[in-house]
Length: 632
Image 1: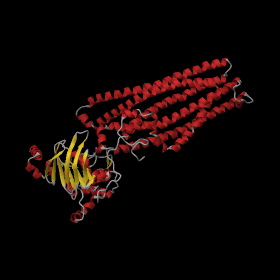
Image 2: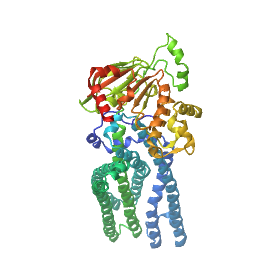
Image 3: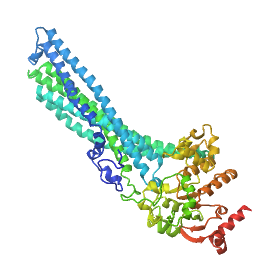
């Protein structure tokens, strides 16, 4: 499904876990119905098999009772089984039993296959929707949500949802239908014993409902503990170098032990309530059989019942509680599934803060071409007075806070002209990276607006905006896959374009030295590359997208002197005709920019060229002098 909201739910709004827990099971189940409708043909075929299976199941005790009545020559024997000899009558009964067994085996096999198949397809659809929704959420969501928690909901929670249909829902319908058919057979044979068995089921049903409610609560807590377990595991694996360097193995092991212990405790509670249901049903089934024998024996002594009918009801007492026990087991699966629905819904109901407007505007004259096109036309652009210059960035009264009113950007106003090279400078926490995140629309400003070429970035499609801007971070992220794929990132660039981008940024030599060149497989996070090599790929990744605005966040910090010289040469060419924003901590690298913006606690306090700021003797001059002193 293409939409990112859970089918059957109201429009996305901030979730409330306490309210969601009060939702009825029926409403939770309805959230899965749109997914099931996609496979209604298979479901209809599977449901149509319930009737013959239930009838075959209910007929077996009746046939066994008829065999006993036939042997004892009782008046309760049906005329159909009365043949010339006893053996002929028994043969008919045996054939009937064989037919019922074959029907159950054959149709149950087909039904089970269809239901399991539908369950897996539903699971895949929900997982796909969940993944699409998660990757569409704003970065703010990931700031407060542990990765392990998301992985748990994308994997094990979604897997449980498939069981709601494949094992739970359809199985419960089958069990209920089977019990109704058995009840119908019983009342048609002897209403007193039938009524006794039905009455005894009422308190059992209430007891099962109570245990299932307790199981539901325990299961929810267990799933939450599992999320915490996975989050802790993911954190330790991701930070294994720090764990080992600082000898935190034992300390982290103790933390994990406690989390693991809490998880086991909650799982034990679910096992207790699940086992309580099974144990209760075992005892009640024995009581039911004893009750049938007691009442049936009394009726037998009064000659109001035959041995054949009594035998039939003994088997019916067992048959009636078999689907009830299966019903209870599947109801446990359903309850676990409802817990998973609640947890998955918490994610799917998370509002997508940053959306494209329906009437989004395109950035004038911007096309997703290759870098050669703009470089070849630079002279034409510069000499053409009618050409509209592109790459202007304007912040107007921008305020921003990651949470509440704790502003990290305060009343920011500035304009970067097309083709201008700007550096952002300031101490740690000054707001430099926050400005870039706002510009790329990873976050929305709390107040104010940001314009690119005179257009509010909220009016520009995100895909176009993020091609218009190219950001090269200090730590280039590498995906599992080959080198070519890490440059194109799924966009339809040709191999020739990839090679040209690598040559333009002077990284082709390094790529060609790899074992399979552009087809060399990268490990997760690029662990088979050095930090400098990963950064080189990031330059090629940006160059191939022909950005109008280039953002460099300490982009050359991971490079050695020789490599940095090559990249600087490529940058000089790449920056021609483009607006550039450079975040730099080494002030010696930004002397040649057009202007320097000096930030402190989210405010722009100084602005000017390198020489101007040194002359003014403000914060920039202080930072510069401290660095010069440190380099001596």
